[in-house]
Every structure is written in structure tokens, then in C-alpha cells.
Image (cartoon, rainbow, N blue to C red; front, side, top):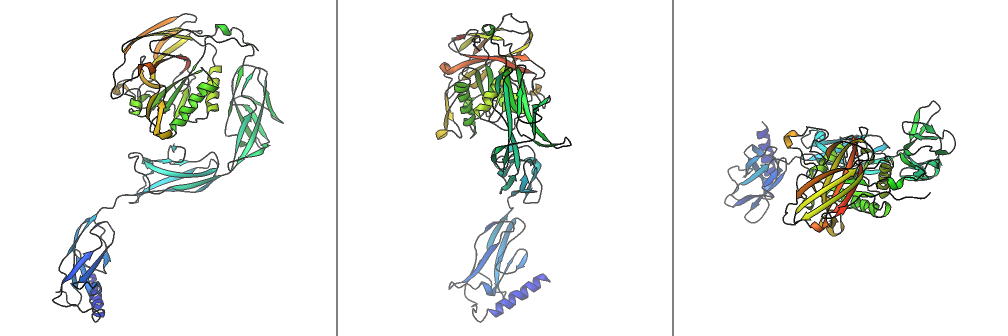
Length: 553
């Protein structure tokens, strides 16, 4: 029935246009199309032209393998090859001299991101969804990212006001992105806690205050009604200025909370402050071994923000904490700086076990409390000093190395100041590696502290690794020493031949030994140990025990 109606419409159209354009039986008519390869449901425009070049399409009917089609512009919903022909509406026996073949391909699947709300308050969560062009919700297999990082899951919020653009990326194919982005505006207030000083001596007074940040603008006037206190412990400054005097040395994590008259929490400073309280007396420092902190850096050469972290670590090491830090860098990909397997796996170990879902990052002394993805030098400085202040029984470290050709012999000596279980780590790192670096000036950068070889522990075989949790990707390069007694020297010997690499071999003059000793402490997350001291020396050189200087009060 539909075909007959279409034919009638076509016939009427031809009759109406017959007087203005009367086809000639012996004239040649040509059928053409504006395109012959299209996607599903993509329309094609057809034209019938006389031998004089006149467009006579209105008087002609078009048909394909499925039957007579309406009008001169149409498409197909199913992929395949279709042959289109044209016949005169008033005389179907008069046909165009040719046919046109159109190939229809399946349309590529596209994806769009959406969210349940685009204007929220601080810490209010937003749910994001990725939908395919076929209508399927594929959110579970996609990552959602804003300007700073990629997030876990499809539901999250922001702790500070601002405007954020969220993109979606396929987990299976990182190059596949949603064809659109969504913008979320975050408004409201947050509160920040400040202290007039964070490193003090016993009985020094510390003053705290809280300021409100409204839509990203910090207010000049201090906020009132907050109570400061030690996290998980006593509160102080219930009324008036938030001031406290610390009677004992140690590390104190301070928070600020505001309550209503019923004792219900109504506001909280978004940050906490670590106050480091040191002993006033400096006696016996000549008998204390010099303490350095190990700073493990997770980075990569394909990371645009990694140069900022590298510069922050170098600046803190050079200017803020001279000679108190020993950095070691683990890169994300195995071809970064030609880092071979298995060292690059350590990046995944640290990222997994320390629950760091972004990079670059750093970890101080293998302690999760002192890890961060923030490249602010003051924060790094505070974390190193906090780690060093928590432990006064620093074990001594010394190293003797000899290099004959590419054959390296190493002797590590250590003298604990406290009887405990210990572990030892020994790595070979290389400095001044000129390599491509996204985000660096001219796309090139001198990489420092690049870990290449571990003398103390290698990766576990694939079949021996657990499916999840600590050690999923291998093991951090430490070996257990067992229980060591205080004021007793222990010696550990290692031999290693540095492999030859191509195309760029190691510059042995730029290679160093990084060695560190860890003490077992079950309270330290995630491994149950922390780095108690670290040191470094060039291959072929040696480093003796070092002691803390004596400071006069």
C-alpha cells in the first residue's frame, strides 16, 4: 500500500512539473549523488540531470533495493550496499542512463558525559554518567578527571569553591574520550587553620586561628567559635584566643572544630596542622648519628606536572633542609630515562600500597602519614621535619664501595641506637640524565636520582605475587636484617656488575649508591616499618659515620 501511495505522489509531482520540463524520450538522463559512502541514517542527495545540464529531478522517481523512495534526499538505517536508480514519473519505462551505488557503514559508537547537578556546595557530591550512543550506561568502565587529577568512581565533590571542568576517559582505551565535557560550579565556605609557628621548643606558646574562605576568597577577619585541640586527644582554647603550650616534646596533629550549643559539630577546618615540639636541651648531640630522610618520588617523563615536583624536592633539599634529604626517583613507565624492568614496577607498588591515586607524588621515610601529591616546598619541608622529630634513636650508617670496570663491591656498616627489628635497602641511582620530559622547558629535562638497580631485593616472580594488597606488583627493595642490638656494629657485603645498556649507557661518574635502614614499627602504615636513616655516596667512594652537630641554646 505504501509503495503504491509513493508511486502516486511521484506521478503527481511529475505531472505538475511536466509543462515546465518535458522529458524527451531519446534524450540521455544521468543520475548522480552528493556522496556514495555514508554512515547509518546519514542522508544522501540525488540529482537527475538532462544531457543539456538541466536539473529535472522533480519529475523523476528514485528507487533502490528496498523499493520506491520518497523525495530526492534519504538514507538507510542498516549497513550494506544499495543501488539507486531513477525513472520518469509519467513514463516509468524511461530510466536514467546509469545507477548509483551507495555503501552504508555502521556508525561509530560515541559517548557523552552528564551529571545530576552542575551547581553544588562545598563537599556536596555529584554523580557523573557516561552514556554510549546506543544508550548504554558505561560509567563503571570510565575514569572521570578534572583540572588536577583523575578521580575514583563516578561520585565525588570538591572541598573548595571554584569552577571545575570534568572529562571522561575510557579505562580500556585511554585515548577514547567522551565527546563533551561538563562544568560544575562549587560555592560556599571552607575554613582554614593557621598557627604562628609549627616548630617550637617545650613550653613555647603557639597561637592558632581560623579564617573563613568564601567562594575562594579568604576573609581578613578571623572566624570565632572554633575549638582547637589535638586530633584524637585533648582540646584546648575552649574560649577566647586559641593558644596552647606544649609541655612535652613530640609531634602533635592539631585540628579546629566548631560546635553548636547542643555540642553538635557544625563546622570544621579543612586542614590540620602538625606542630613539632623539640626538647630544649641539646646535650649528647655529639653522640647522636646524623639523620637524613629518604624521599621516594613517583614521577615520569610523560607527565606535565612532574617537573614541578622535581623542582620542589630539589629546592627543599638545597635551600630549606640542606643535607637532610636523600631523594630516590621511581618512574611510571619502563622507557622513561631507559629505566629497565623491574625498577619501574616500584612506581606501581607505591601508588597501590600508599593509596596514591595521582602522580607525581612523594613519600617520606616510607610513612603514609608523610606522603603527598602536593609539590609545595613548605609542605615537604614540614613532613621531613615531622618525620625526623618523631624518632631520636637514629642508627648510624656508613658505606665503603669499590668500582673495578663495571664490577661494584659494597660494604654497608650500621650501628643501631635501639634494639629492634631492622631492614636494609641499597639502590644504584643515576643523576643528570638528559631526556624528553612533558611539561619541562623545551620538552627536555635533566633527571636526577633515577633508580636503576636494587642490590638488596628484587621483584618477586609473577606467580608468587598476591592478587591484591601489599606486594601486588612486586616488593620494595629492602631485605630483613632480623633483630639488631643497640651499640653493636653490623656489616653487610654486596657485589654487583652494572649491565651495559643501549643506546645510552650509564655514565658511571654520575651514578651513586643510595642506602637506608628501616626500623620495624607496626603502627607505621602501610608496611609496618619506617626509614630510620638514609645516606648516599658515589660509586667507588666511601662515606663514614656522621654525627649531629652540637647546638647552643
